[in-house]
Image 1 (cartoon, rainbow, N blue to C red):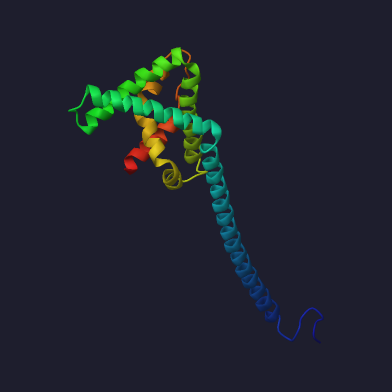
Image 2: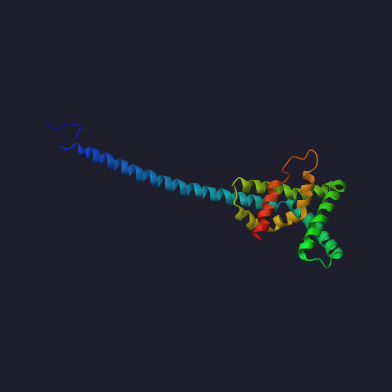
Length: 191
């Protein structure tokens, strides 16, 4: 007499049905995992794009525009002095002279014109935040360089020696603007 628990006469039917269900569940789970992975990738790309747009907006803010304008003014003055004092120097030597003059200028501004100094050093603060975001993987180096490569190269020329000097002062924590300088290194290597 057939059992009420079996459909048909063979108990293998239930085993086969169970295997088929397990295979179908595995396929459905795999499709779900792939779909979830695609969704996560899309969410990550959207969040990175949003973050880049926010950084771009911050870079174009009134505060940063003032810092950029101040930077351009001082940079122009530095370049004029270097060109006048070292007219025969090659580009590498001119960059070195400019970096040294920037260090001296920032030191003077720090003591004599704190408002201008703080605007200029705000430039470093912005890129410190961006550099930390790159280090943590919130932004890609490539995206940041696409937006900010020029200013990052300028940051190195203008601020590196000053930051290194400030880093040696008593009470200044280790790693002053380390993420900004690291990002600047990446921009320089990218050419």
